[in-house]
Amino acid sequence: MRSMTGFARRDGSHGAMSWVWEARSVNARGLDLRLRLPDTADALDGPLRTALKGPVARGAVTISLRYSRGQEAAGADDAAVDRTLAAIAVVEEAARRAGRDLAPIRATDILALRGQFEASGPDTAWVAEAAKQIDGLVADLVASRGREGAALDRILTDTLDRIEALLPQARETATARATRTAVGLSARVAAVMQAAPDPARLEQELALLAVKADVTEELDRLDAHVAAARELVATGGPVGRKLDFLMQEFNREANTLASKSGDTALTAIALDLKVAIDQMREQVQNVE
Image (cartoon, rainbow, N blue to C red; front, side, top):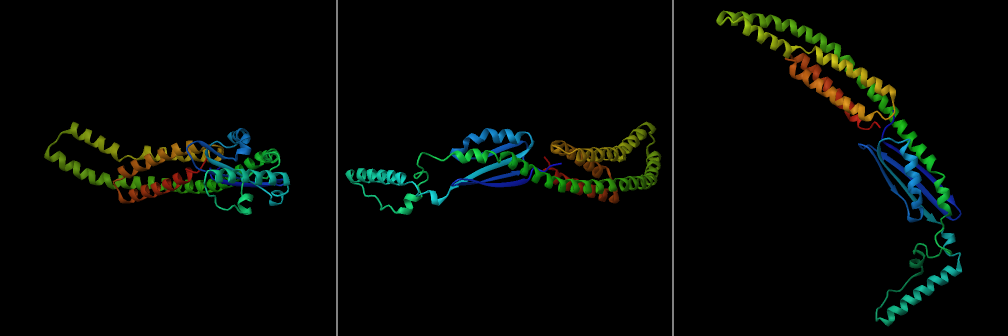
């Protein structure tokens, strides 16, 4: 089992260039890939998507790549400096002819101009080196999601144990409730028969009351849901959607049990079931 939450980071360098890869993922209904790449590395978009779509089935995944050029290389090319200064002179002369005053330019302003001191255009050799880290970055992200998934596995298993332990208690309480209900019902039936004897109508009412009071089917279905949930947890892989649908069934049966309880002890157990189911449903939202 894997979580949809994870993080991975890889650093690299090539010549004067250095870069940082970061991959983050959170829960989402489907697979949502968000890639933040610099213009010089937009060719990595396709390889990244290809690398992610196999190992990652669900989640909002954001991958960013940031790079920087070493300062020692910024002023190494005298020709680039000359070109930049000449360009500034042209702009200043054009501004003077137009009667426009420009603010004084400092050396730090010039150094901050990205790409101005690259002798023959942007250095893109580093992109190929950064591309070699894609598979490792994705593997690190999947491993991170796997560690989170192992924690989810333990939480879900413990919660299923709690639910499974409550079901026998519910059965025992329902049986005791039936005995108490039968005594009170007998007295009421005797009073009704004395007042207005109608055996057919009485039989219908008793059948309806029996259906409303019987919680055997709800408890049996909860047993089946626990078994199905355990199987999904043990299977692992992208089972989050199936578990989410199963949580809806869990909740439906617990609600029905609470509405049919007619007994404070059974209602308390039904509420404990609902709390455990709600806690499990919150955790399921993070399962891939």
